[in-house]
Image 1 (spheres, rainbow, N blue to C red):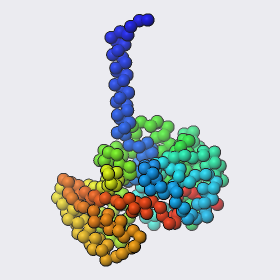
Image 2: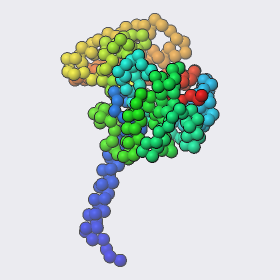
Image 3: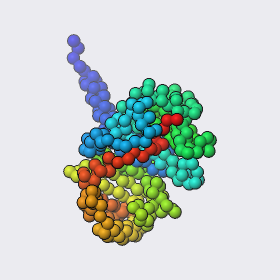
Image 4: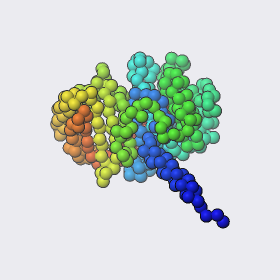
Length: 338
């Protein structure tokens, strides 16, 4: 046998180096479910598996609506058990009084699905279908208003373990997700928002959100939480994350145009936090009061250059309570049966 030549060794080293670079890029790339999302105003992502392991919420008995139970019976999909990762794109609507309200959503779900059962169910509830990029798109009416003026959900199966959906009025978003899927899972793929802001997400974050994530909580142009109006416009840009560092660490960064703006925002939010802490001291809720008070007490607001940074520790008891709701709330993400 011929011994490897110097050029053979160089070729092998080049291939190993290329593989190493590819693996590094893949490790630093956003999760695939997030890369599949279309252009949007905000993105919310969660890796469900660590949360399920930590809280065992899949073992909790959940009260469901009759229609949602029909969906589970027909497809065999139990969200608490079968979902592994989810990503949501938030789209600001031009008409906040329209069927979608102020915000519409596009979603990608990754997990364990029976493709045949799901396709059979979607065929039964869809009012129309469309073939695009080799996939079937099912259009399903949702909400009380039916017909073209009502809210519609478009659903398609991207692969054996991935589902995409969008309740936007047009097909542009669901087509964009199919186009991204067809282009392959390149670590450089994804929306412009993902490209601009994912680098700000702390490493090892199991859940994160970027962009105008205050949109769902907007009221009269401002963000409202727990009944308190924050001194922030609804289009404020945030980078929020949750990761485990011996304890569950919440971090929210508000991005301001200048350091002076960040200083004003920090001062205003600190005042709101003091009011909120006072309210929490007055109100008492026996079951979660201790855990909630512990989280509130850990809240801190600091300034870092042009950013206002809010941090807190989330007690595991509070996380378990949040992950196991007493009542299932139906949503457009899981269509109801006729």
